[in-house]
Length: 497
Image 1 (tube, rainbow, N blue to C red):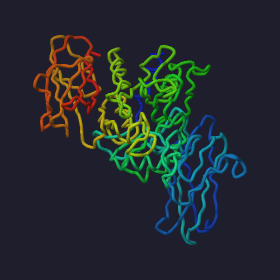
Image 2: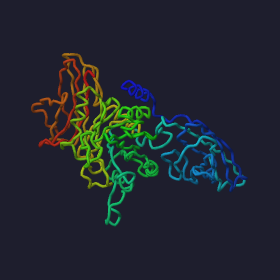
Image 3: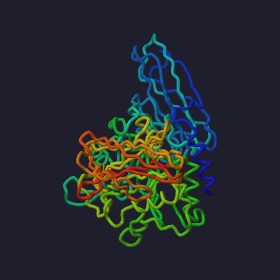
């Protein structure tokens, strides 16, 4: 099982998150005779297609030529899934699948057969001509949310740290908040959660509903409005043996761990690997009883932990509690895994003042990811690489950066260095907005004595040296208050892993 999961993940890592060439290109011409007419442009959809994405461009706009756009399935206007939407002239690119669709269009089964791009021509001058080109992508489940399908395009091209929240719920699962009158609790609209996250200054969020992706169509509608905050499709895989967030996968995943079809977590993880997802165990040390049904990670069978890319080390306000996920995460590090520690608010009410026993306010904690750009794949690749720290209180400005050097070789958080016995590693720690706090360095979970050098200076730079014994080690940096409260949780640099 470990070999299968590793192979599937490696194959995906070799791909490039760039828009692929379309499967079909449809072209045509219009003249003044086409004024106030409709045209159906047919194309074939093969069996196994699970998503259709179309991008339409046309000439003649300078002469006020206008083309409205719709889509018909094989059954046309007569079948339940025949008419798939009409955007008028407001959308150039749209996508439809069984789980989600661009606003103006309808999700539903993608039946094989003859589909038709429906064009309406409300205006073309008598003497005018125009041409149109429609690029068509016919995708299968294993492609996920490619850039051509929206929701994953880079909102910022800069290679830098980005701040976000990876765990929140809305009316699409069990999110609830007071109604507008404040008189009763109702399912909490997704818009409130997104607006609160934007107000908090977050740069990416994952809406992670329990076992469903019904929120994705609404996310597609909101993304152009919140155009500086990336929205990542996610779901909280909710089982009787624990919960885990799955990011960036569009297809259904059978979550029924313990059933004939999904006998254990290993079977589910193999499905996730085939779908190229990033999966993180949520709140692993929560109870699994009437107070929090299925919440704690309590697998009945031995699990190959290599199938997970991350662990929610901090959930809501649990960093200092007895049920904190940090000891569970560090136990996996001690077992030799390279696995990212992340955080999530687990917000259920779309507010900055959580009313749930276990949840935090939106953005508390904040997961901060170093990514090549602000895109879905950029953020997820940053998590895969462990280029992450957790701002436990969800500030807007606290930061941590760790670089390790051994000779000419360097590594950041999440990276690995091979260091011979007797050789020294030089660590440089950069922090911001943490002056006067206390630095703590852990070597395989045990604190290193920094003597009088643990106080974070005003310029935020500290250094220390560490001597290798040639054996595997993980070293990571935390920042705590003078009273010992955890403020920043860093990911490890791995030595001889």
